Image (cartoon, rainbow, N blue to C red):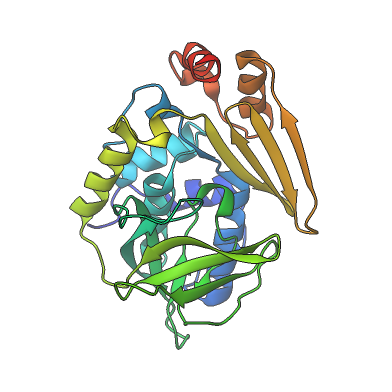
Length: 278
């Protein structure tokens, strides 16, 4: 798909990027760092019964840039993919199977989207993922096996999963390496993203449809909201946790701390109340 409909300048203004726009590793790092600090991860559309069906550039730009909303992985990485291609990067859409915080069991479905980005002057591709919620990497990661890769928050590494020949992205949390998702480097077609997004935003068993979720990087902190629970995790390893008492308080946090325009989300307060009281 081409990049018709992508307002690159509008996107760069949204994330506060004023620097170079050439396809280099430094520009890629700056774009990722700015994106995760300005566009929140959130699931308010699926939560209120609105499927995430249109992943075209105009639709994603309208929601995440013009309407100052956030979204989930298919929206974040979808928009960034269009922008990076417009800037001259070579970008493939990949698919992930989420294993983060899950008990061992059958292989999960491909319900996550990530990107593999080629930079002309670099000898390895980069894993770019600006849409993995509370463990979103804040910098591009080289697609090499085994190397611990520092970020301004926790370190990450790409490993090999014991079964199936998958790669696995891991992050170090509280001194332990935790698997986030399995993936391979085979590019996925546009329709694969559409199907995954539809499933994740409509299936009754999808946590995107049943849980209030928002995440944002603020300087050197991760702000994570899950239903009533607001947690702030810092680069030095300390955390602050707070329980929100009412739906109104949750809406205030979404608007004030995560910068989401909640006024356009029809029925949000009623749905949040049903979730936290259910």
